Image (tube, rainbow, N blue to C red; front, side, top):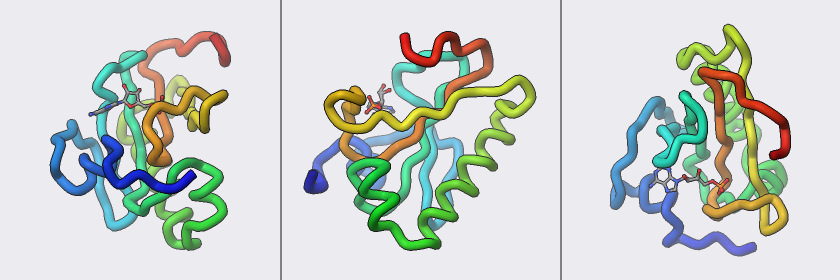
Length: 118
Ligand code: AMP
């Protein structure tokens, strides 16, 4: 999949569209999902142009990959998700139900999340 520079998360990254930001550093931006599916629903995205988790894992630099997972851990702790647990999801491609073609990880919690696959 080639990266679409007009996808909605690219527009959030370049400032064309606002977001409810929870964290930002040189590698990562995290913001609240516009349609939260649980009490806490945060999206964590790399700043680089990666379509999905496979593109990210294949082509991102070690610094980007490390920065991404360090940020996920920090956000999970800062959001209070580590006390009772949470779910991280990276939907990928058509069968995975991915809607936005910029790699993102959902962090869902703040209440029981339910069955793994609904
Ligand atoms: P996915 O189906 O894994 O691609 O998830 C895309 C997510 O992006 C959905 O949960 C949407 O609610 C969310 N979303 C779409 N547009 C925005 C936006 N402008 N700000 C925050 N979240 C968004």
